Length: 169
Image (cartoon, rainbow, N blue to C red):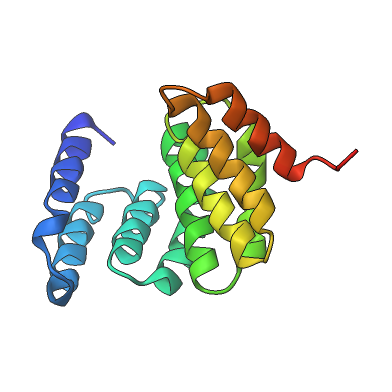
């Protein structure tokens, strides 16, 4: 889609906090209006709709839309939005009791080219792992993500993160 549409969509999302929970449907209508401008086969349409449903507390309605966006080639159109969709889909899957599927979806993202979403991948994956009773693995991911942001103790924290999941020897 063109930059004007992207800018208007970004502006709409910037107003999200102006819609309290009881006005969530109004916000989704704003997104639906923007989505109506897209071609029928655009992966951005189900992605934006999924984000709106997800952000207003409806993971169950978001899941099929994220899947549709990815199936329509969102990752090929925008690697960044494709990665966001995988993160958000995994979170939604966890919310509806399908954390194992979230783990399967996000684990390959640990080896994807690095970008600003790396920590979100690790954080969401950690939540999915915790939902499955795999807290040590989740904590390892979170500590590993945190370590580079610390003003000190980066090496120690990274080592502690690894030690949580390495076999004791």
